[in-house]
Figure 1 (tube, rainbow, N blue to C red):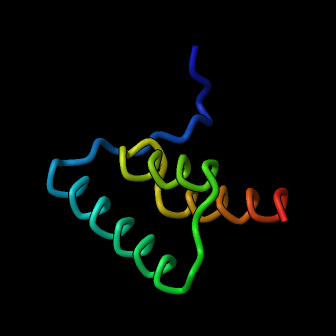
Figure 2 (cartoon, rainbow, N blue to C red):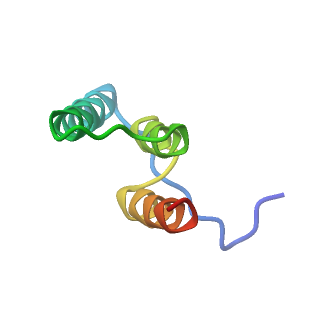
Length: 71
C-alpha cells in the first residue's frame, strides 16, 4: 500500500522521453570527450530518469549521493 507521502512522477510522453534520452546521450558524450566514463550505478540513475521513474531533482540528489558514497 502506498503512503500519502509517496512522490509520484507524472507519466512521460514519447516526446519527453526522447528528449530526456537525447540530453543524457549528449551529457555522456561530453564526458567521454573529456576522457571520463560513468560507473554502472550512475548510468542506472540516468536510465531511471529517462524512463520517467524519477524527476530531475531526484536524479540530481541520487547522483550526488552516489558520487559521495563511491569516491
